[in-house]
Image (cartoon, rainbow, N blue to C red; front, top):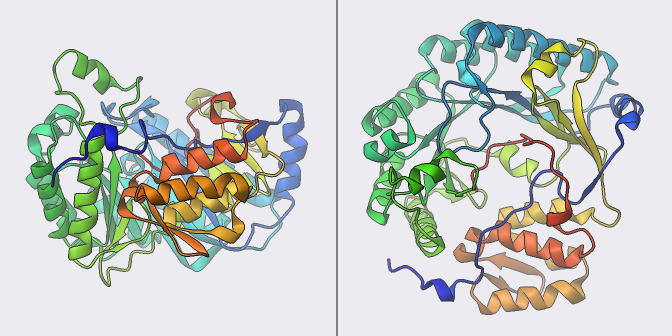
Length: 441
């Protein structure tokens, strides 16, 4: 497949809305009363919950969210504090509601000992109103997710495992700092899917330095052969703070592919997966035929679904208020057990209620025209995008093409900039990385 010419691309860069975009920070003295009022209400029906495990065995050179190295003693203490946070919240919360998806992310949750994983999952089941069919995801890495940990998770109720692979190409994996060669990574995923009997999904990244179309096609073909239920395909985002940037500058990595090459690789993934009968569940996520993948958490969190958050660096939202849990591990651990260790609270701007819903529609690939904000401003933009092949207009909906789904985050950002011109993303204060789900692009 030939790459599009750079000057034919509809945008010069890929941008996205970041957590807490378009919101006004609440003054810290107001936090206790506001938090108490949020806790006085029952959990909404069909809500989400996110738990953050902020430890990594090493700093992956492509990741901008590394915070804490692995230490078994700190992890045990962290698990204790996390369970105390769960119990304190539950003691103040009005009973009721339901949670349809629970996500343990990081960091690397599977670094926790089997005993700590089990007691954390059991504490979550005891303190949260999980629905009978709740999607319970544990995110992990191959190096640390041993059979005893898999057994502990399944016994405690986990029914979905998400494993970061990035690529099966051994040469690229070694430059990224991955311990296992590609064939071992593939064998592990096939084993996990068979051994656990649960939904197993993997992450792949396209547009990595040194990753051409041939390598990317092999990555997709390998993933299709492993018995996985789902697959995430994320575009590599060369953010300035990443260690890989310095490695490219020093010649340890070749330059990263450009946007035209990334678009071509995204379209390769979409076509290969569609040919294999996989369904596109969101812009970046695909489900195998009859594989049982629901993708509840990752899709609904982008649609503004209420989300409870626990653990250092986690982010959540309730009743129009977004909040972040203290990301500094030391301060989080030292916060009294009965006190929610908050780092920020913010409320949405007046007139921006449509923002999350529209983001969810773009993620799903179909926008309802009747719900568009300020249509006099937005419709000309959609018509322009239709002319560029990014979407199709049928009178009631705008349906994104494959090209449009690649550019979806950028399109959402541009709509927001036009519809809320007095509060553009560049004016939003950012204090910490806020973790509500994993996303590479």
